[in-house]
Image (tube, rainbow, N blue to C red):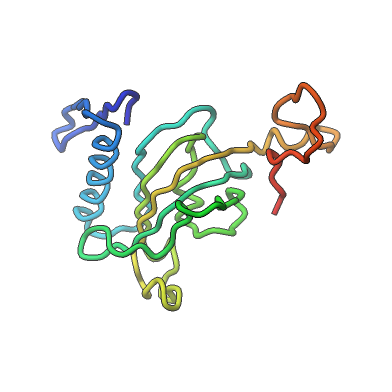
Length: 189
């Protein structure tokens, strides 16, 4: 995925192609279909397939960084997107997570590495990296491959969270003390 609705890819002959799409939506939809095609053409999915939809800006996230994300999760059924089983897109609350803390499925921990603020990514996650043979009662069948579209809305880098003396430091300077507690600091979970 490139800026201004361009995508660059290789074909099976390692020939480089660049396509400019008429809209961001067309570029995003194409990228999703490429990822689904990769999944359907692999003999066995044994790791997370990641496809950037929008690159975002700033530094790529690493383990220890805190994120707020909007996401939608689908079951992978009949070689494509099945029913939505979870989403927070139309809700007021974003999901807060700290990468590497083990609070989310392994596929997310792996698939979100390197994402940037404002970035969107499509993840196809095999059962072993998701809920495995147990599934989730009433929502995710056992041994189900999952598909997520995740968007990083906010980032707090781990190295911005504390200074060498252990005191908390802000990731940005505020010109005047705010009468309201700042919503920029994430609680450490």
